[in-house]
Image (cartoon, rainbow, N blue to C red; front, top):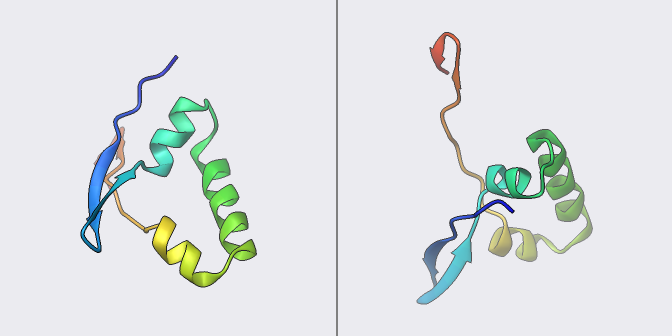
Amino acid sequence: MHEILIDVKEVSGKAIPAVTSLQVAEVFEKQHKNVLQDIDRILSQVPEIFGRLNFEPSEYELKNNLGFR
């Protein structure tokens, strides 16, 4: 079983657990692109306010054979 580190972010004065789509993909042994597609599908089916409250875009650096991009 994979271990997942859960960050805690403060939102409106409340401590909210948070994980990244990369962590979800790793733990569930899925391709990251498929997790992103699933998130997009979820966001298309729920009210916009739900998406803003539960899914926050982020960026990360990806290291490949040529360095970071």
